[in-house]
Length: 295
Ligand code: NDP
View 1 (cartoon, helix red, strand yellow):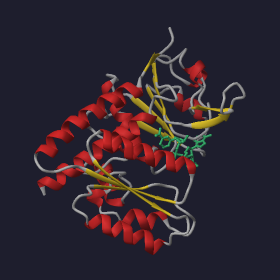
View 2 (cartoon, protein in one colour):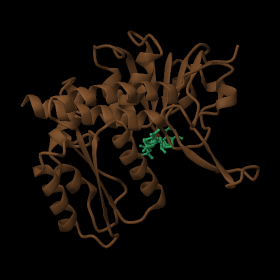
View 3 (cartoon, protein in one colour):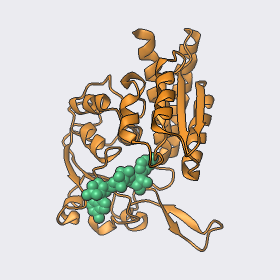
């Protein structure tokens, strides 16, 4: 029987509705959560992401600010904007859209954002908090979204073999840090694979939960999946497809057709992990506003 689909779009909608309700309650107490997004340059994909983040914020009843800067912006100029947002009490979350132009060091910018406004969860303070299991820290939105998908789909994670393919700072490593904690939707035995892993299939084939974030279109085939596994495909890749109007389509890092014949549950691409990222950004912004109110 083909795998059951984990409907990321529906779960993300559920979270966004919850966030909107909780935002309204916070507004009634005098605080409107505010998110500022800075976009430097004119990368079309980044512009689309930034626009949808702003729209999602407004739909949730949050205050949304988008700062668009030219590609020639210098690092000190960008840092001055970050400083102003750090000091602005109406702003609870700050996000600088990556990638940045070459003249700007992303690490310098990430470290300049106040950790309590770092709703992307990339500041070293938040990275450390996630690793030690401190729930006050902000978890990067994509791995947080994956964990939420597992939780809301009723996937048993305790004691499960969880194999993660990819060790990036934005997905693979924080995913590992989340799944290895002893709390809910975690408590798994975690293996992290990367490009130097010998015999990748030997690892993936024993995963009860397989999370793939490698940026390689359809690299995980059904033959590499354990029967009955839960497969979470983080990958978003554009591949040429002459049959579509645009000439391309989006596929994941998992070969969906073969993997769904073997797995028990699987996320599609699109409408799997993708919509969860914005939902978790809103959720982090709401929490940042609550924490600001409590402090
Ligand atoms: P990176 O390119 O930063 O990292 C990819 C990781 O995969 C690296 O650790 C790399 O290993 C590993 N890898 C690459 N090839 C192989 C291989 N053949 N075998 C084993 N491991 C391999 O990518 P990201 O983590 O930023 O993103 C991964 C994917 O997720 C992309 O498709 C991206 O578009 C998507 N994505 C989706 C998001 C969403 O909202 N759904 C958000 C963020 C990303 P090594 O470290 O050795 O190079």
